[in-house]
Image (cartoon, rainbow, N blue to C red):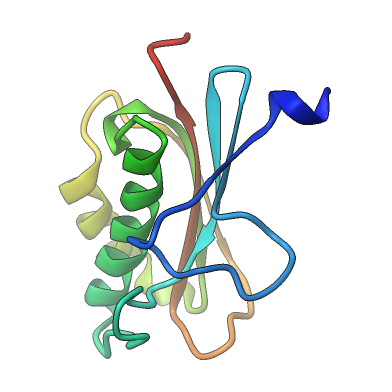
Length: 130
């Protein structure tokens, strides 16, 4: 893929990258959103309750989608990474506040996360392509 066909998407509405990654990359009518944790972009705080962490992570994904000219309604795939598999039902209930049928394809896995309970990434259609 040509370098100039990839466009970085960034917003102050989500935490700035700390390492070598972009908040999002738009290419071929799709937005690839990097994993977003539950960090508030303005305060740096992480909600204590797990449901609040899921909401904050999804709000961060949504902010990047909006910066690219899309919304969570345009999501076609979502990846959810949980620190504790026992939190699945809470995550799914909050997820249903943000996504509606037909739901995006989703993968949920349990992983080791540093000081947070959830991280979420997404692939989102931009500009009506697809």
